[in-house]
Length: 343
Image (cartoon, rainbow, N blue to C red; front, side, top):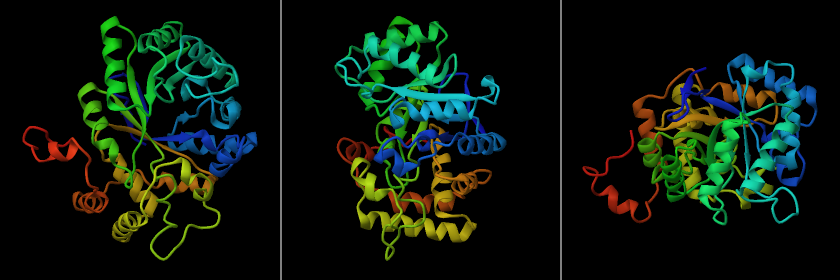
């Protein structure tokens, strides 16, 4: 297992992180991702991760209405807390009250304390804003997060699903007041979803923000089960979750999977292993958050590390997954002498 620096922080994280969204299964949406609510089963998954060097586990307060955090806390309680990195999130609604949502001081402090309690811990290693809250002043949000860090309840702060200006404004405010800054950005990125490269990747390179990739297999489309002539399998979660996630045109998906298939034959690896390894070669990527419904899937994901695609293979995948750029990115691409691509 390779350990990488998370942005400009001193924290090192494993190149693969276990996504505990599969723990809990509290409603139809999360049941589609996974419904591991048996503590012994969850503990087995945790132990497989730890044996492989995956010592980081990502969850959120809204995953199965907090049950994911509860199951994760019990699944790691046989380990030394300092040997484990826990990442969790807040901002989205969890409760019916008017202040049970957002990134206000009220909600963030309450959410952090409740997450810590659910997980049976004393602190959170990486605390994410799950999304940007345009109704709360950025200064209020960041001061609350800085207070959590100073109180020892949070080690590092990060964000998720921010646009470029959301992230840059937040970093500027932190710098202005000397508050804790976002060291990571958890965002969607995959071989069938490369928009991250347009604005957020150059920003992350310039500002030293590490990328934590969620849904690196394109919302379940790059499992190797979907290709031209093969419809979505009956057991696929896409039947229940496709509408809530990134939209991918069928012809584009088939084109990308065909290119992955060719590289898979050259390497003897599987489609998801190729897709994950491609991401690990991209600029700013610190870790990939991989979920698994069972031990077999988890062990398959572990096959994505310990080797590297060749430059030629990466070029094939790049070409197959390239999409037309929106403005102003198509204009900037014409002047690469002044706007070089991230490397």
